[in-house]
Image 1 (cartoon, rainbow, N blue to C red):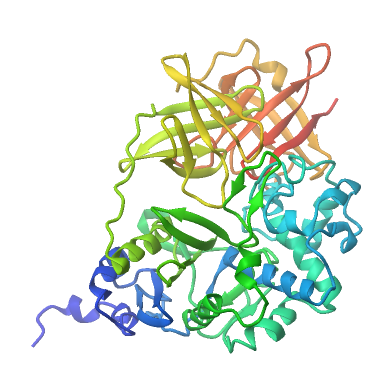
Image 2: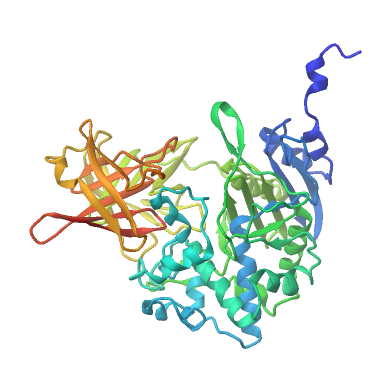
Length: 550
């Protein structure tokens, strides 16, 4: 007789999640996900495919905490930006039908875009080298969450009012979801049907991906779909909110079974001639650098092993799709939580299956602390976390690996920001050179943790309006510090305090974020030295101008 009632009352759905396909490597793979293999815990659904055979498939945690629903091979999940390779495939299909060319300007298909976009080609959009800011982040500046309500029409209306790109097309690389909104419109223009219907007829149906669809409204009820969770107060889990109208940027819901079918097709493509050669073709910037981001996918070499991948994420859902062609090994991870360690699992599994040792985290001698570019108004910070150097750069968290004696690069393939440690010292730390997605290196100076002294805060106060967003921000002084807010009683910014760094540069951070570099702004002055406005900078939306109002 069981004398422990609590044991019998404990939810058991996670045990059913563990039923699936096991092999010789399964115990070691299970150990990688031990933190998720618990009752009433959001977790992950994992498949490992070796030489065309599924050698491991099971879930960890549960698909729905409230109902104790276990993961199954047909449990649906949002795959986020992993959608982009499907959108890119649609473009290649239309190229094969001679309905478009990758060298075509996007204005050929979306003529309402501003004239400067004549220079932006479909290839620029596919490879994230267009210079367009990420429109999905712009609601933040209107006091709306990233996952707040944003329609395609509203997204496009902002793009129509853009005055210039962040950099010349092809000169740099910055990840932007706006690129794939425009590509979706190109498919719909020449394909003559909604992107979701095109994908269904030309990819999902031929590959028998029966439980996969592109949904513009991801809040719509769908059978057998995992609930997505984000951390709540006091260690609780709450449902993630994401009401943005999505398309080829991140709108696909799929299952472990269906994504396995897609990976098997990726190994030996049948739908598109020379599919992998074209999708993985080199992307070279204007200065000759070859970057990892290709056409909706990344291609890199890690520890001598080729790695083809694209992850995805949105509030409550994460996805990783990784293929190692040298080992003929694929890993698919669908998660319904917010634990970013999910993106480290595929490489760990690759080392387990191949029998190689995982490299030890690189411990560098880079000194920790904040850095600022006073010329551009960018903020960064270096930190040591769990034996590795991490760069925080305007909202991006980038673990680094060494590429030379004094050079480093992000391990995140979708971000290009080579870092060089210079020999010039200031405040006891070296100056840094960072190529923040652009060709020209940007110099970052070390600053102190304390706020820089500012002679007269009152000159920064006032009302500032964005012609692009048609929003007004108001800067005031409270308790001797600059505060910023909206000209609205119904909406509030996710940041309120501005931390001065000197020379007209300030930074702000979101609540509960690990570093105060999420957003920076640099004030602009007229020919008489008076404040005329400022520009907000995040890594994906640089140079968002607010003009001072009289």
